[in-house]
Image (cartoon, rainbow, N blue to C red):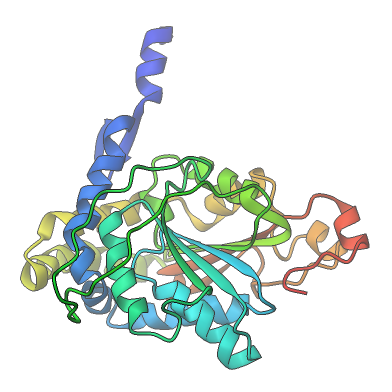
Length: 322
């Protein structure tokens, strides 16, 4: 039997890819990875997925169908990839220019890349988008904002940008919570989901797009070989950074299975689409195949959950994006 001291030591350990590290180290180590890849993040996403990540993200946003002036929180939003899709979808499909997205990330350099991208869009300097530093595991806390010096003159590569902010996210203040390819990098996934539950309004939606597990054994083996034999050397070739992409493929391997992650979402209090309880409350099956939807044979997966306090929500007419 382990002593109390040994148990506490075990509880303080987590993983960084295939390494076992102290929990206090992970945030800084992950931050180092994303600071390293921030400027080349989109290039490497295209190279690693052969451009398919764009189709995954399009499906993710189309399925959620944001509209009606809702308030969205895009966590680990980094370069603004999902946020711009949310705003574009609301505008082009529903003529909606009221929907608002807060792009939140723990990494300031990733947010700066997002600011650069959004500055080239129609949403810049409008109430529809906001950039914010924050920790997905503690959205009620404020982070220190690093100082950033603007260039003397604004250029496309080095534009003049407003300073970042960090503010608490209030409970029951968000209609749609999205996190795409970010939750596997967090130290405590359960705390991230719990925070999502806290900040969502009744009837709000939690939506996660993340790498899944390929269920066909032969294809799973081929995908694993590609991940470990091709992606790290590709990172070295294109951006001179093998180690960061070695971590990224290891973090994919360590992420829970589709069923395990769905169970975590349910344990946080969310109703999973397709369940009898969700159907009885009149909640729509946001994902066509039950608690999750596999994309490209499970290489990526979408999970959703609805925050419904009780049957009273349905009786009061509280429905997602009504």
